[in-house]
Structure formats: structure tokens, C-alpha cells
Image (cartoon, rainbow, N blue to C red; front, top):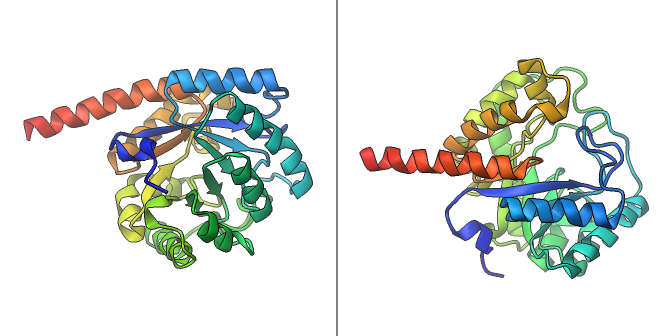
Length: 280
């Protein structure tokens, strides 16, 4: 499988979030039927999203486990509907090998794994099918990840080394390195200080792993705590501030709720970067 066209152009890549869950922190329960799903997907595609990321299990802090059967029940009809309407670049937000296998068979091209292929059988599946993959760092489980002591001695170094180890495990299982992305897991079992340090340290994380970096802080509680904004839907300006810092630090793919606004923002960031290089 060749490197995907959405990653080979050198420009930042925007991944639109499609939550199929009733309990996601920002937009749970908004996509309850096929028409709503297709309308949101088309809006994101027309807004400039190169990828759509479908999740059927919430991983927000405190979320409870959902059965594999329920995850498949929510996910597969959505994948099939999108594929039938010509949406080719679908990422699946799952850590379960059976769900990943079924979604890939239905036409998805990428697995976005919050557990970084630690579930038994996932590495073998990735090596066999060789999809594009994102491996994310998460402390513990969603239900408990923000409890207890969250501090690291050196979050950037420790998480960078952990992601590098997971990337090497996937490569050893047969997944081409060119198919790999890493994600530091902003908000997944980390303090605000850790999250900000990881945002500014994207270049170091890329260097540690040898992989491109996916960054996701869209509407997260980090923004709310720092900016004093309770409503996730009102956190776009803060989300773009973090995204801009991550882009300037080396992140390449951005997982977001607000696609058109993010695409516009990144076009200006890229133009400024190019202008800066021209002056050097």
C-alpha cells in the first residue's frame, strides 16, 4: 500500500471527527441517523477534511466500557453508508482488533488506536492488513485516567520513549513505518502542564519515534480550564491556539470538530511559515 495521498503532499492534514456515541463530551448524540451522518460528513469534506474519524465508543475521562457488540452495531452501518456515498478515507477510532478487522473489511483505510495496539491480536492484525495507523498514548483506562497523581518526571521524554517503543512493536509485526502516526494523547491522563509541554514538544516526539504526529486537542477540557469556558462548543479559539502551536512545533495531522475553521486557520499558518522561510 503506497503512502496515502493526503499525507504525501507535505501540507497539514485535517481529520474531521464523527462521533457515533450518545455520550461523547462535545457532540454526543448528534448523529443518530444516516441522514445526519451523511450531512455532517459532506460538510466536513466540503470544508476541507482529508480524513474522517469515526468513533463508536467514547473515551472521554470517566466514560464507561461499551461492549464490542454495541460498538460494531453503531459503527458498521455508518462505515457502509459513507463508503457507498464515496467517502474513501475513513479512520476508525477503536482499540479492539475484531472491530478494526470488520471496519477494514467494510472499506475503512486507517485505525486510530487510543491503546496503541496493546490489545491482544491488534499488532498481528496491523501487520497482516497493513492499514494506516495512529498509535496514541493514554494513561490507564478512560474511566480512571484522570484520577490520582498525574505527574511525570519528564512527560515529553517518557511519552516520547513509550510511543517510540509502540511504533517499533508495530513495525516488528509487519506494519510499514510509512503507515504509522503517533499521538501524544492530549488530555488522556495528563496534567495541563504536561499537555502544554507535549504540544510544544511535537518535534521531539516525532524525532523519538521516526513517525509523523497526529495532534488532537479540539474542544478539550484543557482549553476550558485555561480559558474559563465551560461549553465545549465555545472552545474553538482556544483549540486553534493549541493547534497552531502544535503545527509550528511539527505536528502534521489534526483531529478536529470544526473542520472549515481549522482549514482556514492552517492555510494562514502555512502561508506565514512560507513567508518566513522566504525572508530567511
